[in-house]
Image (cartoon, rainbow, N blue to C red):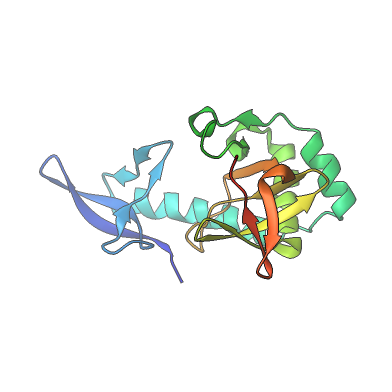
Length: 173
């Protein structure tokens, strides 16, 4: 099971402490907002890891919405259009860091709903789990097991088809 962990690294010739993501071989330094998580002390790195793991534990204890509540939650938010994928895989996304603390708790309930109610699906050969609500489906990208979901994607069911016992992304014609 992939995890985020503290390890040593070198930064400008100095020994530092990094959070490593072991989903790849060799493991890579984990990034947040496109910046590598590198710290001067091991305690700083462990504190950051503990904070991230605590967020995941809170997410794990969230009570899922009913499907009706989940749909209402999703419809009540601004979803940003992913312009970089406009031509290849049009979708929108919602980031947890955009939300106020109270709404982050509801976001975690939405994640719990995806985990509980999602069905197997594929984006080309990449396996995802999709929560289908009305005319949209929702998913998040795989993360190390000790990290909370920080971004949820959605697109319309126009880009989804059921075949071979699973849902598949259906690109534009």
